[in-house]
Amino acid sequence: MDDPQDLFDLAGKVACVTGASSGLGRRAALTLAAAGACVVGVARRAEALENLKDEIGPGGDFVTADIADRDALPDVTKAISAPFGVPDIIVHAAGVNTREAADDVTGQGWDQTLALNLSAPFFLSQAFVPAMKAKNWGRIVNFASLQTTRAFPGGIAYGASKAGIGQLTRAMAEAWSPYGITANAIGPGFFPTELTQAVFDDPDRAARNAAQTCVGRNGRMEDLDGPLLFLCSDASAFVTGQVLMVDGGFTAK
Image (cartoon, rainbow, N blue to C red; front, side, top):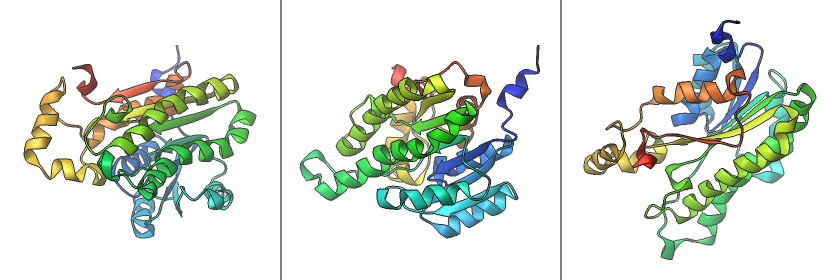
């Protein structure tokens, strides 16, 4: 039997991580780089991406872009592929939550949310699939949410986009897994990021969320590492179309 640790080795692979300037996206980029992948981070904040590149070292690079801008996508995909080649792994961690109540949702807020959270993961993946097919190997990891299956106040647009991610993940798997490309999603619970700052700024609310989990706490950044490596590596070769909830059992109760 080969060394099981080899299943998680990403040496020789190229990964693209969107939303890599902060939060779970930044953590994902660092985790994949530590496993041996060359990593291109994509986000809108150049300074934060520069810092990420410096932390990763020679195997890191970045592209400053708004991936919700579909017209710019051809240039963005070329820029992502320029440093190390076309990505073998795509992690879609970029996201936005406008937190508008249902009665107050605007067309602009709705369109912004769907464009970044749902449309961008599809069209960016679609652009890189031909190269993955040619290699008969690819990994797509979307970011789902507790709101993929639960309704939260002020989350109707965000929840709709994340419910869509669940179906998008299954549809990607149906379309592309015959060519060696797996498509899965991670559904984080409550982690301390910019997107959830409002939650953690309210200690009582954060405590209630922790109590809702089976393990009795909210997420820590390191809780993402193992599930992400699993879904981005050979370890998950026979796993596709799945949403893996990394939520401490929040959705189990």
